[in-house]
Length: 150
Image 1 (spheres, rainbow, N blue to C red):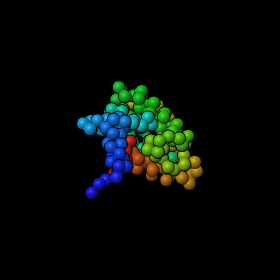
Image 2: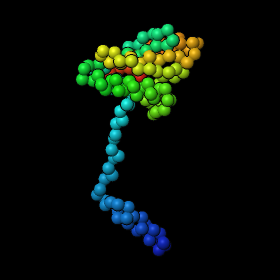
Image 3: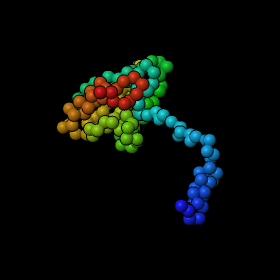
Image 4: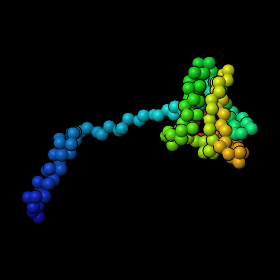
Protein backbone atom coordinates (compact mmCIF):
# COMPACT_ATOMS: atom_id res chain seq x y z
CA UNK A 1 0.00 0.00 0.00
CA UNK A 2 1.40 3.37 -1.04
CA UNK A 3 0.87 6.41 1.13
CA UNK A 4 0.05 9.64 -0.63
CA UNK A 5 2.91 12.12 -0.70
CA UNK A 6 0.86 14.62 1.37
CA UNK A 7 0.50 12.13 4.25
CA UNK A 8 4.25 11.55 4.33
CA UNK A 9 4.97 15.29 4.32
CA UNK A 10 2.42 15.89 7.09
CA UNK A 11 3.96 13.18 9.26
CA UNK A 12 7.44 14.62 8.73
CA UNK A 13 6.19 18.10 9.54
CA UNK A 14 4.62 16.99 12.80
CA UNK A 15 7.77 15.16 13.83
CA UNK A 16 9.91 18.20 13.05
CA UNK A 17 7.63 20.45 15.07
CA UNK A 18 7.78 18.05 17.99
CA UNK A 19 11.56 17.99 17.98
CA UNK A 20 12.82 21.34 16.83
CA UNK A 21 10.33 24.12 16.19
CA UNK A 22 8.31 23.39 19.31
CA UNK A 23 11.31 23.82 21.57
CA UNK A 24 12.73 20.46 22.47
CA UNK A 25 14.42 17.25 21.57
CA UNK A 26 13.07 13.75 21.88
CA UNK A 27 15.21 13.17 24.99
CA UNK A 28 13.99 16.21 26.93
CA UNK A 29 11.23 15.65 29.43
CA UNK A 30 8.69 18.38 30.15
CA UNK A 31 9.29 20.29 33.35
CA UNK A 32 6.35 20.51 35.73
CA UNK A 33 5.08 23.96 36.57
CA UNK A 34 6.62 25.27 39.78
CA UNK A 35 4.45 24.94 42.84
CA UNK A 36 3.94 28.25 44.56
CA UNK A 37 2.40 28.35 47.99
CA UNK A 38 0.32 31.36 48.75
CA UNK A 39 0.11 32.60 52.27
CA UNK A 40 -3.15 34.20 53.33
CA UNK A 41 -2.15 37.67 54.57
CA UNK A 42 -5.42 37.82 56.54
CA UNK A 43 -4.65 34.64 58.52
CA UNK A 44 -2.99 35.16 61.90
CA UNK A 45 -2.91 31.37 62.37
CA UNK A 46 0.00 30.98 59.94
CA UNK A 47 2.37 32.53 62.47
CA UNK A 48 4.24 30.25 64.87
CA UNK A 49 2.76 29.83 68.33
CA UNK A 50 -0.63 31.36 67.50
CA UNK A 51 -3.97 30.14 68.82
CA UNK A 52 -7.51 31.54 68.64
CA UNK A 53 -10.53 31.70 70.90
CA UNK A 54 -13.98 33.23 70.47
CA UNK A 55 -15.72 35.62 72.83
CA UNK A 56 -19.37 36.67 72.64
CA UNK A 57 -20.09 40.40 72.86
CA UNK A 58 -23.40 42.22 73.25
CA UNK A 59 -23.58 43.00 69.51
CA UNK A 60 -21.66 40.08 68.01
CA UNK A 61 -18.41 38.44 68.96
CA UNK A 62 -14.65 38.53 68.81
CA UNK A 63 -11.84 36.32 67.62
CA UNK A 64 -8.90 36.60 69.98
CA UNK A 65 -5.52 35.61 68.58
CA UNK A 66 -2.67 35.10 71.08
CA UNK A 67 0.88 34.26 70.13
CA UNK A 68 4.54 34.17 71.08
CA UNK A 69 6.58 37.39 71.38
CA UNK A 70 8.41 36.53 68.13
CA UNK A 71 5.12 36.43 66.18
CA UNK A 72 3.36 39.35 67.90
CA UNK A 73 3.88 41.97 65.16
CA UNK A 74 2.92 39.51 62.43
CA UNK A 75 -0.29 38.47 64.23
CA UNK A 76 -1.30 42.09 64.66
CA UNK A 77 -0.62 42.87 61.01
CA UNK A 78 -2.55 39.79 59.83
CA UNK A 79 -5.44 40.71 62.16
CA UNK A 80 -5.60 44.21 60.69
CA UNK A 81 -5.63 42.70 57.19
CA UNK A 82 -8.35 40.24 58.20
CA UNK A 83 -10.57 43.08 59.47
CA UNK A 84 -9.90 45.19 56.36
CA UNK A 85 -10.64 42.33 53.93
CA UNK A 86 -13.81 41.51 55.88
CA UNK A 87 -15.07 45.10 55.92
CA UNK A 88 -14.26 45.74 52.26
CA UNK A 89 -15.52 42.30 51.14
CA UNK A 90 -12.53 42.23 48.84
CA UNK A 91 -9.95 39.48 48.70
CA UNK A 92 -9.32 35.93 47.58
CA UNK A 93 -12.36 33.72 48.17
CA UNK A 94 -10.39 31.48 50.52
CA UNK A 95 -8.92 34.33 52.59
CA UNK A 96 -9.73 34.28 56.30
CA UNK A 97 -11.12 37.80 55.95
CA UNK A 98 -13.70 36.49 53.47
CA UNK A 99 -14.84 33.55 55.61
CA UNK A 100 -17.22 35.42 57.91
CA UNK A 101 -20.52 35.36 56.02
CA UNK A 102 -22.83 37.05 58.52
CA UNK A 103 -23.12 40.73 57.61
CA UNK A 104 -20.96 42.59 60.12
CA UNK A 105 -18.10 45.02 60.61
CA UNK A 106 -14.75 44.30 62.22
CA UNK A 107 -12.47 46.38 64.43
CA UNK A 108 -9.04 45.29 65.71
CA UNK A 109 -7.93 45.83 69.30
CA UNK A 110 -4.47 45.02 70.60
CA UNK A 111 -4.19 42.70 73.58
CA UNK A 112 -0.90 42.13 75.42
CA UNK A 113 -0.07 38.87 73.59
CA UNK A 114 -1.86 39.39 70.28
CA UNK A 115 -5.01 40.94 68.94
CA UNK A 116 -8.77 40.85 69.34
CA UNK A 117 -10.98 41.36 66.30
CA UNK A 118 -14.42 42.52 67.38
CA UNK A 119 -17.21 41.74 64.89
CA UNK A 120 -20.43 43.74 65.23
CA UNK A 121 -23.54 42.39 63.53
CA UNK A 122 -25.13 44.73 60.99
CA UNK A 123 -28.52 43.99 62.53
CA UNK A 124 -29.38 42.98 66.11
CA UNK A 125 -31.29 40.06 64.56
CA UNK A 126 -27.96 38.69 63.24
CA UNK A 127 -26.10 38.75 66.58
CA UNK A 128 -26.71 35.09 67.48
CA UNK A 129 -25.85 33.90 63.96
CA UNK A 130 -22.59 35.89 64.03
CA UNK A 131 -21.66 34.49 67.44
CA UNK A 132 -22.32 30.93 66.24
CA UNK A 133 -20.29 31.48 63.08
CA UNK A 134 -17.32 32.92 64.98
CA UNK A 135 -17.48 30.05 67.49
CA UNK A 136 -17.45 27.54 64.63
CA UNK A 137 -14.45 29.19 62.97
CA UNK A 138 -12.49 29.36 66.22
CA UNK A 139 -13.12 25.67 66.92
CA UNK A 140 -11.99 24.55 63.45
CA UNK A 141 -8.91 26.72 62.94
CA UNK A 142 -5.63 24.95 63.61
CA UNK A 143 -2.14 26.38 64.15
CA UNK A 144 -0.34 27.00 60.86
CA UNK A 145 -3.37 27.41 58.61
CA UNK A 146 -6.72 29.08 58.16
CA UNK A 147 -8.11 26.02 56.39
CA UNK A 148 -11.18 24.73 58.14
CA UNK A 149 -10.43 21.40 59.85
CA UNK A 150 -13.61 19.49 60.47
